[in-house]
Image 1: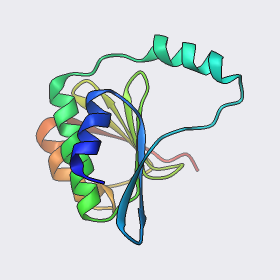
Image 2: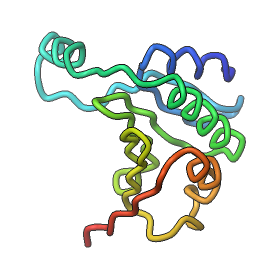
Image 3: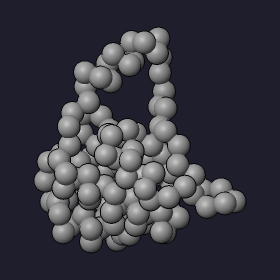
Length: 132
């Protein structure tokens, strides 16, 4: 897999997940969880997908590249707003020039610390308290 594959997924607003194996990183389409017929889901996805700006696409490619260089597993999900998920409780939601940060208390927590400078340069960070 290469960074070109990631660029292609981001350019087409297709969700993906990055995992690691013996031969380096593995890039797979994100499937998610479906409780309905797949035809219903496809109709819903076509209607709900919004176009993201060129600057956001470039930022997402740069963020993905940085996370891969640190061998961090993540999912980039394109819904109404792009969602960068590290696990169930820790994720980032991109809304215009604001990035909503969930599950982290501070910027210096890993893996957020690896991309905090990239985020701060282009976006305003808003931290939301973890639900306990």
